[in-house]
Image (cartoon, rainbow, N blue to C red; front, side, top):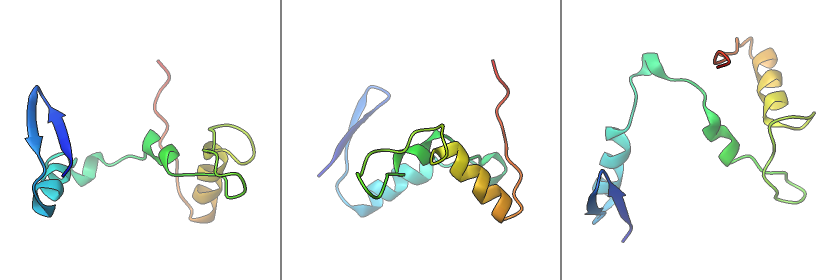
Length: 81
């Protein structure tokens, strides 16, 4: 089974319930949902299977802008620091 270390304590995932509960404990309330950088972790170029970058005409930003336009969305942009 999988093992994950959290806060200095080790916990062995013994069954599906253990894994699901780990995700549930990390959930944010719906009011705090945002699209974060995790969207970049699963987008790959279909021709060469390389991860898609942020910029450019085929990048994550362009994809998100097209989705927002298509579905009448409004982007949430984190202020620059």
